[in-house]
Length: 344
Ligand code: NAP
Ligand code: GDD
Image 1: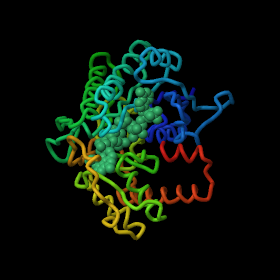
Image 2: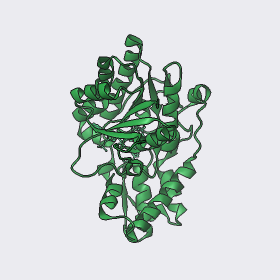
Image 3: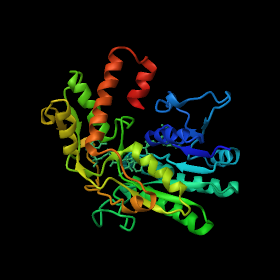
Image 4: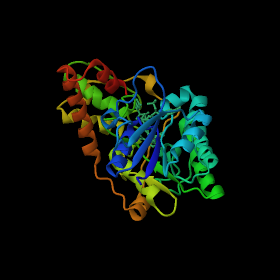
């Protein structure tokens, strides 16, 4: 029988790559999506299979991580072997505008999933999408699994709570529950409200004369940026281990937003300084200035290595945004898929 996985946040950036990885390995994949007033499955449409056809291995269910009765019912009905809990309000800047909601989804959402599993009586393996944002005002560099947390945002604080709840269910109830402490990871499927995709999308538009300026906030901030495709492989590897544990997943290189700008604009022969302006709206009440991860444990115990470099990531994202714009211009994409890809 096929191994059954349940993914929350399946239509997000990571959910879509993880679904591809699991389907390639003959899993039966179940995903939870929220009802939205517009289509929100743009990242997984290419994987869609009619659930009534024999051989279908991808099944979507309506649900929400703020709705515990729904989560309990889904856990009972699906009885998964593995649960990948990726759903969250994942935008750090937005978490300052919506601290309570972020606590409810990004923090308590994990407790609701863990409780739904406990109530179901089944013992699926559990993956928690923890974050380098938990290190916040970093106490040491590079950051490892032993570096103390010092979150600098409501999002970071909610993720610290979720991290410790995952550890607690492992210790208290014997759950096979692991935290992946993932550093920033990006891709052409990244939402354009995160800085990397905001930049690469703007580069494509500026190159075509469709945009004059790019407004950004803190350019000095440094991140350890990897590719999402590499990072979902690390998630899966954690869940396959005999013993649950917590792992840092990072490239071991850090680059500033300014360096990202240089690479992205230079790739199309433009000078970023001609286009970028600072807009204080994009500054945060408190920001995380430097993240740099040490993924030695993941390398040694999981055999995980990132395959794509920072330069690969930037050029892949710029090229994908140029291609997307060309498809839109030539009318290959219908208005609906255009909207989904633009905003999804
Ligand atoms: P993302 O693209 O923002 O995806 C988040 C997913 O969560 C979306 O599918 C979203 O659904 C879903 N979601 C949000 N609120 C929900 C709710 N109340 N009920 C059900 N689903 C809900 O994020 P990502 O980049 O794939 O990241 C996946 C996870 O890893 C997140 O928990 C994030 O915090 C964490 N993480 C990400 C990074 C990174 O650099 N990408 C690094 C460390 C940790 P909608 O489409 O309906 O909004
Ligand atoms: N979003 C955004 N927009 N960020 C900007 C901008 C802008 O216009 N200008 C500068 N930045 C800076 C932010 O202040 C931050 O220091 C850095 O760019 C990265 O911001 P984001 O791309 O929004 O990502 P993040 O690091 O805050 O959060 C991401 O990574 C975390 C892992 O460390 C998200 O994916 C989180 O969900 C994830 O946990």
